[in-house]
Length: 284
Image (cartoon, rainbow, N blue to C red; front, side, top):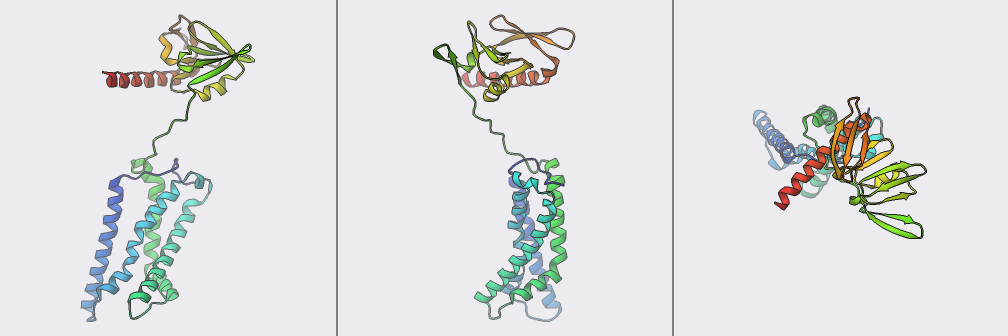
């Protein structure tokens, strides 16, 4: 049982923020109104300041709800097996403690009578404990199961890692800087890789996997266990009628596309087409 929310930070829409604030405000006003009705019904004096003091109980839900959202969206805490249960119990206890401290402190500063800290804690436990159990239990279950499915909590935009713009190749005693966007394809030639340009080819002492991780993986697509192509340098592709394909590159090279990598290849084509459309719109 983990947090159930697969991302580091939770982004709540403004509507969700407003809903929390409005709900808590309504509960506060209803509780004050209930105190007024009870005072009239039982023929005792009603003091707005005292009613507001004890109904600050509801205002504490605003920071506590945000705290729950923040904690459940923290990637590191997903390793805690019983995090939702621990968070549920901690929220209930912390809410009671904070409320007890607030009532004690404000009554000490502004009221004639001071409400004892421990006495107020026991009072909150006996009178409002079930409310806290119900609300925080429902909140944890909602954040864990319902919110992600309803898209009320959205993952942050994925930040692409920095990619190489140039690769330095050792060519005898010389070092050659290659602009990665000039690369047609990269092939595995154990124990080297061959970096193929339009009019040249360089051997480089690195693995295909390690160099792939440094390149823009939306542009440099693996099409075979031993080949990566620059999708921008592709001219066309056609089926071999056996599940594999032949890819024609700008320099006339024909490269085999294995059926194993076809899904990633199609995704790369879609991203490339989208980027070209955006570029055309900007330049146009």
